Amino acid sequence: MELLPGDIGPTGRPLPAFPEPKPLAEHGPARIVAVCNQKGGVGKTTTTINLGAALAEQGRRVLLVDFDPQGALSVGLGIQPHDIDSTVYNLLMQRDVKAQDVLFRTTVAGMDLLPSNIDLSGAEVQLVHEVGREFVLGGALKDVVPEYDFIMIDCQPSLGLLTINALACADSVLIPLECEYFAMRGVALLMETIDKVQQRLNPRLQIDGLLGTMYDSRTLHTREVLGSIVNGFGDKVFHTVINRTVRFPDATVAGEPITSFDTSSMGASSYRELAKEVLERWRQTGGGHAG
Image (cartoon, rainbow, N blue to C red):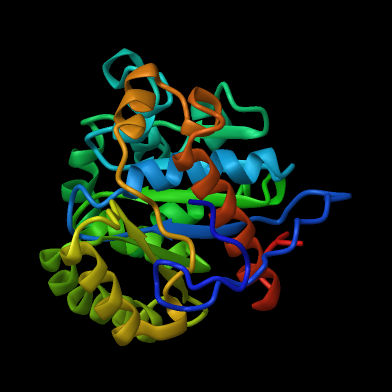
C-alpha cells in the first residue's frame, strides 16, 4: 500500500513530503559520507550502491569508495575484485598512485567507483606504523573532492583502523540498522566510536541518521525493534525504511543497482525516497551540493 505525506509511516511518525531536488548548475566540492555499522549483514553495501544510484538519478555526481576488503560493493557493481590491478589499497599505500588511476566508471551515469579487494586487509596492518595513520584515506581522496557532489564510503563491518580512516575524513555518517534485536545492541558501541572520532580527530563529523533496513511490516519483532530505535534516537531515524525483499540479492548477482535492475520495484522507490530525504537533511545542515 502506497503511503502518502501525512500518513503515519513505519517509524510511527507522520510522513513529511520531501521536495523534489533542484537541478545543479555546477558540481563539487563533495560531501563525504561514511556508511558505517560494525555489525555485518545490515545493508551497508546495498544502501551505498542504491542510495548512490538514486542520487545520481537526481543529477548528482557520486563517487562510491569500496572500503571493505571483501569487495562486496565492487562485486555489486559488476566488477570482479580479483581481476583488478589497482584498488583503494594501492591508492592508500603507494604515493605515486592517484584516485584517478583507480577509478572505474559504473553502468550508472554520474556514478563512479574506487574498487577494493582482499589486498586492503593488509593496509590495516601496514598503516599501524604510519604517522597520521587515521588520515591516509582523507589525503588520498583530496584530489577528487572538487569533482563530485557526494563521496560515499562503504565501511567494513568492524571499528578498526580502516573505519576510523573513513570517519576521520567524513563530513557525516549514515548508519544502516537491521530491524532485529541484535542490531540494536551494537549501536551504542558505534556511537561511542563516532563520539571519540569527533573529539579527537574530526570535530565536524555529524550523524546524518539511522536507516531501518530489512524491515518486514508483517512481523511484530521488526515493528517493535524499529519502534525502539525511534524511541532511542528520535528524529535521527530516517522516515524512509528499506523493506526486506529478494530483489536486492538478485540485483547484486546482476551487478547493478536496484534502481536500474528493477526500476519500478518497491526497493527502488524506497531508495529514491531516501535520496530525497537525505538531500533535504543535507540542505538543512548546509552540507555539500544538496540542493
